Image (cartoon, rainbow, N blue to C red):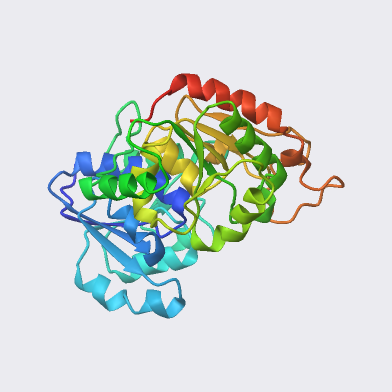
Length: 344
């Protein structure tokens, strides 16, 4: 087996995709324990990659073309002997080639002509497989055969836990109390379950004593959270925009469960083994559902899903999501609560 000493992993985005790549990172680290492993990522997600076990160095890049091109000479100077492109797009593959590495590995079915750049192409036998398992095909091709169970390993510093505890304590949530995280937004409008439905579920959970509902999300998701809170009869805690992406593993590891649209936080929650109740519309739970056991995915099996579209063309708009009732979500949440009565 080759003795790679300097490895570059290219997986710049998005948040959920980065989590999906964690088991591949863990497998490569286990196979090449003395290598220096660098992860190239968009700057907005660097805080999460900094907390992934096995990563020696995080290489942040700006999202612009100029941001990427400005890194070429610096990356080339590193003399990587192995570059792994898990993004599979023109830009990521081109940057991988421009590093000058003698071995650039990527998927044979990569998009935008990316396979043209690779010196080794990894075949994907079927499309209907989870992204985690698809990425692990690359690890296996490199001889870094993973363990029987894919590993999601965060190194969460004590300071993260302390910061989360202080933040929650400010709202009266103390260590040992059960609370429910709720993520009501998503990048695509077609992934968003109705605000009124989220509001009904949040009210019922709090009225039934299932724990305080804590809204999470980024700064640009405040309007979606406000739409839900504006229709609630009870008061929920709103942490939207108050936590960094790097704090999400510590935050979600303390939750009793997460109720969410298909989103990045959903994958972080699954990675830290917090039970998930997920609402899926245009995307495929087979390909990108919460990974592992103990999670529930709810959707309406209409003929047009999964369509993977940001625009709904159904005569009943968002039928795949809107047909899922608050009662169904509540039933799933009650079942999840029995799995994890108290947070860790």
